[in-house]
Image (cartoon, rainbow, N blue to C red):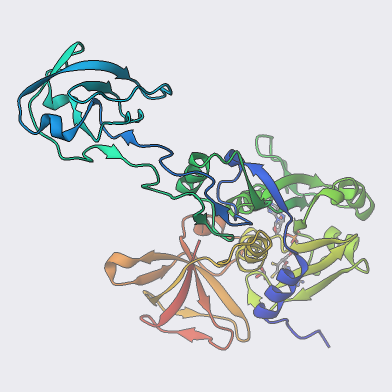
Amino acid sequence: MSKPLTRVADHKADLAGLVGLTPVVDLPLADCTGLVLARDLVAPIALPPFDNSAMDGYAVRAADVAVTPVVLPVAEDVPAGRGDLVPLVPGTAHRIMTGAPVPPGADAVVQVEWTDGGTATVRIDRSVVAGANVRSAGDDVAPGTTVLTAGTVLTAPRLGLAAALGSATLPVRRPARVLVLSTGSELVEPGRELTPGTIYESNGVMLAAAVREAGAHAELLRFVPDDADAFHAAIADRLGSVDLLLTSGGVSAGAYEVVKDAFTGRGVEFRRVAMQPGGPQGIGRYQGVPVAALPGNPVSAHVSFEVFVRPALRAAMGFADVERPTTTAALSAALTSPEGRTQFRRGAYEPESGRVVTPVGGPGSHLLSALAISDCLIEIPADVTELPAGAEVVLRFL
Ligand SMILES: Nc1nc2c(c(=O)[nH]1)N[C@H]1C(S)=C(S)[C@@H](COP(=O)(O)OP(=O)(O)OC[C@H]3O[C@@H](n4cnc5c(N)ncnc54)[C@H](O)[C@@H]3O)O[C@H]1N2
Ligand code: MOO
């Protein structure tokens, strides 16, 4: 009797349990994009750090320009970055640039457009109130404020904020490192000639891209020989530096299943998950390294990555929300699904026509072009075998 199928949720939990949290490291800001901040960031300085001008113009006392037009002597020139500030003498103006420190004694800036732009003297044509065009120290951030909390995803503005506060590095969960392996004697490198019986290797590129898109690092090892000893030799010196070994192919019932041969009895279990595509899966640890051995059919490999591997990698990197966004929609056409298996069909979502999803291509796990033009997976629960047009389904966006 064959082994019972593993439920999708159980396989997912098993994989997530294998891949532990990555360590916290200090990385330069340029390498932190999209990563998770590991400790609160407390502002060591104020933002802005000093009172500065919001406009190119003239620093004045508002009281001196209450009646206009008025002509004032220009006593100083204050470009951005000037550090030796001279106090403003009442009845005078300092020419000042945007971002330059407002001199002590000045309480407002008149923008240059409201003046004659003079350098020795300036005629000011319009009055301003005290505080006009002055950006006060601490206006944005007071020193000691927690500006980003641990767990925050480092987006572009958040990295900008960290830099503005003087951070050169940030403590982050380092990206998970994934070794992506492709095996199969039929596989040829894109760019070379196909010979009879061969196809271009595509899973490796696709899975490495998916790993990177998930925020992790991928190292790609293609054309690993279809021989267990050669397979072990190819990966031996790389295992020490990876958090996950991700293979595709060689896991089902054929006579030449190198991944299965290489790992069976060595800490990796091969099972069938109640899912289509993505039934045959290998999972375990080889020499201490978590292994996810995905099926070789391209759609099976990608769907398996989306359902099992991506959430596990995101959790390992400290993301609170590890799942893709989901929504519900009405099917534009009837679908059938195998009994006892969760089916993930490829779909195109059309929110503008009343939240409708159209299945793209058939269920075949070789239909890579249909996957390539889809924007979501339609999830059909294991206990559902038929869905009429109009039935509500859950989608997960790709
Ligand atoms: N007798 C049975 N045969 C199969 C079963 C089964 O239960 N009994 N399951 C089928 C299902 S479902 C799947 S999925 C596949 C999984 O097979 P493998 O993981 O062993 O994958 P391969 O046989 O190596 O390859 C399957 C298919 O995918 C192509 N492939 C593999 N690697 C790549 C790559 N890197 N780039 C592009 N294409 C790749 C390969 O050429 C095959 O066409 O098994 C079914 N069979
Ligand atoms: O489970 Mo396979 O992934 O259907 O093609």
